[in-house]
Length: 72
Image 1 (cartoon, rainbow, N blue to C red):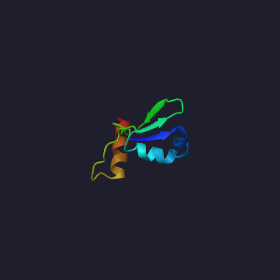
Image 2: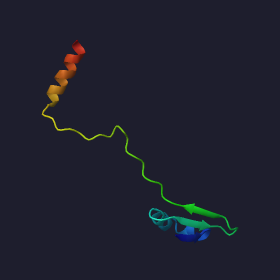
Image 3: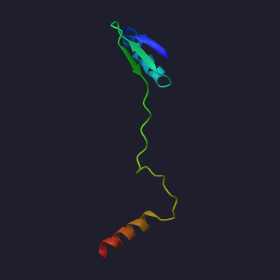
Image 4: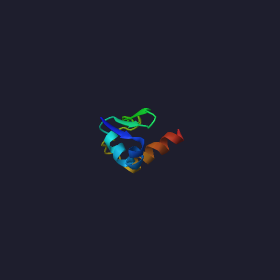
């Protein structure tokens, strides 16, 4: 675990964030306050993100099906 002073953290924020992706990073103030920085896990994919399927239906087949469902 890396420890940075507040000033070092301010000057090296980009480096600090890169480090925090893989390990916990601590930032210490002059008054002794200690803060911990670590990366959150990435958001899970939406439940609506589904893989496509292969089909032999053409665009015209789909349009015909939609049109016929609206006529009924």
